[in-house]
Image (cartoon, rainbow over all chains, first blue to last red; front, side, top):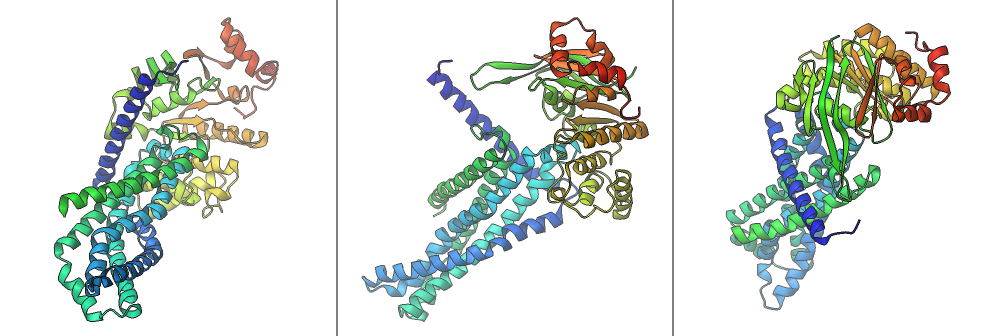
Length: 263
Length: 266
């Protein structure tokens, strides 16, 4: 059959609308699961352990590396204007408002988001989710809601840890290696970081956590219905890649939007 | 005879990649008698699994009515649909056991999630079921550590926990060797005799599966033919049924039906 470009465009538009609709309903059902009994508290703790505790090492190393690089780069830039005393301010503001929430979300998307998507995808193709439906067990309450809550609890806490470790990394690079005055580093940070900056960072981390867990679990849950994903194990691998890419891009787009709105 | 499941003028179609529409069920009407075993057969893509999904409310028909014990599945939502689903037990093609749960936890899951039984009661029920299905001693194993036949037995034990009125078997012997297939059929017959549920078996395993059947439904190109006994099929004058008999059963059909009607002790 001859391909009709207008029909193809229309089909793609309809597919995107239908996908957005399904994902929106998915989000509502995930939150509705909080109010359905029995609440799976042990599963919530297990997911916090997986998303939060399991990501600590990668967050620690990413934060230390980012803070140290910021310390060195910041020192070289500020030194040209004789303003190395502002290093504490530059490092802490950059980390608290931008890099902390963004890099934490990207790390969680790569480590935990991909795993959540693959887990649900495999459960879907092996009919485990259908089995839950058939036993009249709500798959949202049983599988999805604990992951949502765990991400919303873990990611902001990981972001705070990222900020603290990153600022410490900046201190090591700036003060210990480049001889910036420790008092001016700490004072620069204390005087320039406001409650508003911290709130913005925390709001961002909540929004990013929601985006990562929503996209990752949603792609896995709907693995059979995603156009071009293929079948079986191949579909899970493709959809997992798609989940990480979509989560990362969404985090970057929303980072700009939130900065533009709240700054 | 009371009907456990009743389809009336059910239509279900799917859009294909090339933009055309494939009608899988085209104004299909039939009933499944309570307490009996009905086999649904047909070629690949004939709509057998779609029929099961519509019965379970996992898929919606475009039009028509599907009654389960007098309740319309096509209109049921939320709690009403959940209530209808508790009447079913389902044995999936791949058993659909939860990989991260042990055998014990898999069988206990419906009791933990759908009843208010204490852990002691659940433990006693699960151990009794595992013993009944010859799975004692495997409680702490994970599905990956089980053979295909054992997985089916765990799946059956799990499906039986809420004492379903209707059992649905989706390709129950796929991937099993002939000895295991025979064992599974014997287990079906034994379990049904004990619990008296309505069985609906979707299977390719023809003609062996016909030995279990009280009624046979053959799906082909969106249409459905109902036979009140497996023997009726071979006398059908319809060309597509004759073709189906020839392709799937050939000469061995006669020998299985006439000489070996009772391989599962029924």
